[in-house]
Image 1 (cartoon, rainbow, N blue to C red):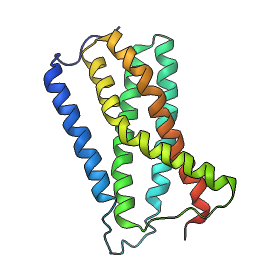
Image 2: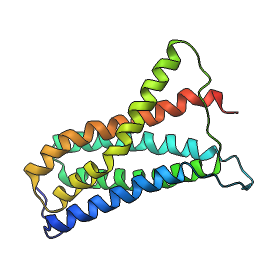
Image 3: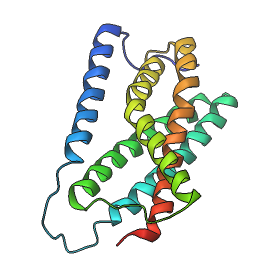
Amino acid sequence: MLSAMIKKNDVTAKWLIGLVSFVVFIAVVILSRVKLDFQLGFDVHVFARINALLNSAVAVLLVAALIAVKQKKFQWHKRLMFLAIGLSSLFLISYIAHHLLSEQTLYGGTGWMRTVYYFILITHIFLAAIILPFILFTAYRAMIAEWPAHKKIARITWPIWFYVAVTGVLVYLMINPYYT
């Protein structure tokens, strides 16, 4: 196992994780309702493509990190997970930029695919809204080398995070033909 990266301070960690999670959630909610009206000289839907690529990369990194930890390659697992967190942070910036600069894109499909799309979208949004504190607590437990607690919360965090990443790509792929 790896040694601790930071000194344990659960009280401060809980406050910081709670504050960061709350601020990010509120920022996404508020900024998703704000539209900036100016031309950048390029198709702002490029951010949606970037989001899909980032989500794809995060999904691949999560699988690779899971494989690494199962093979007891803990240093690789750590690197892959920090990279996944970094790319998820870039995703958040790109997501906010896309929603600040573009109009809402409505799904144009019909029939059973419309039902599938909205099921995926609704579950994606809900789980994306709650996953950040899980990710941060899981990372914190790893950084203080509390491996049993890290493993316990990671068993909850990993599948939710993976689902959010994969469904983020699916939402893009399903709505992409309907961009106006």
